[in-house]
Image (cartoon, rainbow over all chains, first blue to last red; front, top):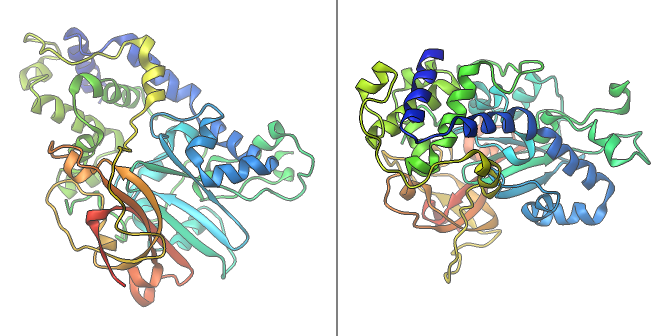
Length: 191
Length: 220
């Protein structure tokens, strides 16, 4: 694949269809700049600011956009609220649709056949693969991203975090907790 | 198409195996495959629905044996060749051999962030009204187009409830064939686990899909 991708890049550059510097900029952007820290900031704000939280669940695109996140794979965003009674999970069975704007590029497992095939049929089994156990009567809502709408889960705020600043809370919000395959970290996990 | 990409509910792929501290890209060639695909969107003149079809439109044996970015790269090569932007002999030679075709636009480095920030919004204006409203019972149609569709097999024929009216959006089934955007009303429809999977289904689970109006009929 090294040779084939390099060869195609050479051809496309020689034809003037692409510019090398734009290629480099795209790679740099998604390797270093756009990532789950964006979504973590959204969650931390939702945990501390009730007005923002309400706005976020009513109009995810606008609320998240107000923090400067949006655009490609983030033009239409919906935030899903985890509660003690409802746990949300996001999947794209047909390909790999994922909220790049707030989470960056998806992990390989999200794009692979095991997750794409099983989450809609056996969400509890998939959660077990992540070491996550939910109470038997928790309702699980799985959201298959079949359109350009992109979903992010807002995990529940962990106990023992009263008075924490947004900056400190951001450290508790994991990428997996915003997909629905994990929970936010607890304070003791940070130590 | 009823192809290898329509994975919802299939068995046999084994457990989900998350990789600890996984890098964004596993190899330099993956970075190239990713960036070349994005950069060629504008000059290539294809839409995202066409690129999704180019990825999924292959034999199951092929699709399931290729890695994620191998599929992206194969689809990119195919779309470039379909539009005569590159040729087979050029791929073999690893160099341009023929005059380039005129392209609508080329992505300049200074435009990258602007283009990414604009993204690809799919909502379109309309004077029409949605046929369904939240709470309506709807049945997903048993459609089986050989071309691109976003209605997975596991919901077809099943009855669900409209959760919300999303908006009026570009219709991928049409857009992917080059027949135009033909936007329709789009809905989130929720199905009970037992409805989808029968008595083996998890009674505490619900699955939703985002379905265009032509995927649905009233079920009340």
